[in-house]
Length: 212
Ligand SMILES: Cc1cc2nc3c(=O)[nH]c(=O)nc-3n(C[C@H](O)[C@H](O)[C@H](O)COP(=O)(O)O)c2cc1C
Image (tube, rainbow, N blue to C red; front, side, top):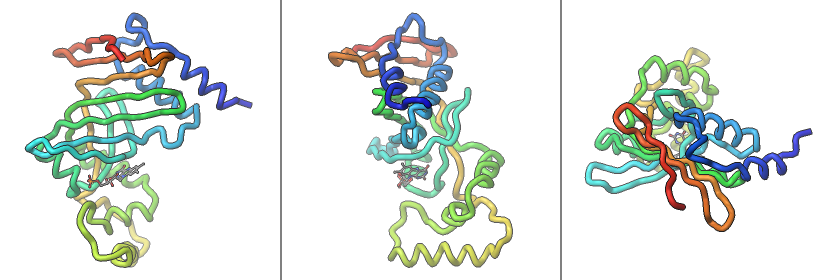
């Protein structure tokens, strides 16, 4: 049987070397994400997303990553909430993953845009019925009168759809963050941590070591 504790120790002891890291951030992110999942980290896809409004006031909240590929990182949310308002005014955002048990952090900065309606539909269909109804019921980020109001709204939509197909609400869907900067941080003894930064330079990714 796999010993999770030893596996975590082994992963945490890995070093990052600018001479041997993959030349694209995606290979390294894929490897680290898999290792975080193998190390049984609770919700390895949980990340903080920082946005800012048009005059630069920041706001940060946790989200769950739902996919990543060569385009970037995908998450789903309400298109009318506070983060969506920020992203409509200012499409620059930053995300950070923290996998404490294996002493790792990944920081990502980039540009955010909505994914296509078709891609949002495909993901919405995979969600449990209760969550799909939740997307209809919740006016995300708006003040509401009570918990009862929310539960009633959920129940009203349950009755409205009455076991029929539940389409995706137009104001709910995915965003893609296309990175321009990705930094991998590996904890090391004496606070001499490894930090490897990939930054987009024209069409190429530049790799640098940063001081911890
Ligand atoms: C671990 C965790 C994961 C979350 N995942 C999501 C998510 O994927 N999408 C989402 O809209 N909100 C998610 N939330 C709720 C957000 O943190 C936030 O409350 C909500 O998106 C409203 O943010 P806004 O008012 O800045 O738009 C999550 C919260 C936590 C603690």
